[in-house]
Image 1 (cartoon, helix red, strand yellow):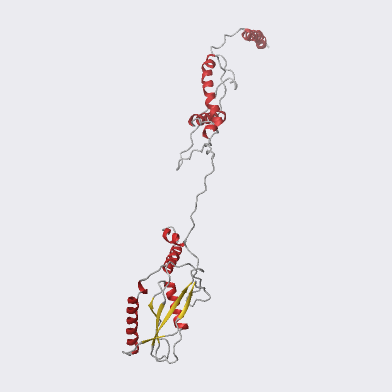
Image 2: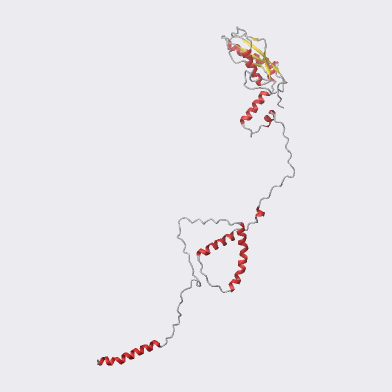
Length: 310
């Protein structure tokens, strides 16, 4: 109890000193308390970490072309924004939080707008209209197309089949007088008899004429032709001559060889028809073994029934 009595005053003294210390003002620290950051006022710096390098460089995304009207509006708005920058720099501006999502599209639009040149108005780029014809074009006069013009005007652009057909028609209707003369006829007959004598072994064999002559009428209809299955109705430039055909027979009274043309009509297609007529319509004797005959084919040319090519 003595100890408690001795400590009782000291307890109250310590308690009083402790209370006095609590009420004594203490000087503040030199560093002010740092307030919590304000998201609306403070600026947050955002650093983009570059992606890891890959084996192949990434292909930059294709930028879609902007319409001409949008490019013109962007180019007109740039001077106004640049003029307003000094005025806005003088006024204090509150820092704002910049985010990559909001700044990236703006930067892309500015870079695209600056890189694309200003296009001319639509009225200038429109193609000019062709001038309207004030006067009607005069129709070209086309000359009549003839077979001779086709044959002369055939060029490399014409198909080969058509060119060959024109050449064939040209040969058929071209008059060649070389084999129509008496001299040419005598030479052809002598060569033919020599071949027949050599084949039959008869050195003194002579040819005999077949009477009457065989007739051939021109224009030539395909129903009456023996050599062709087509009509020949074009007018001829020269009157055809009568043809002379040589025919010889073997011991069996069969034709020993093809008939030979001794005198030409002047036209190739008439010569072929004359050879066919002479061999089939010639009135040969009944006894004709190892004999030679000449058949004349007379051409009945009717100029009023033919059609001109010129």
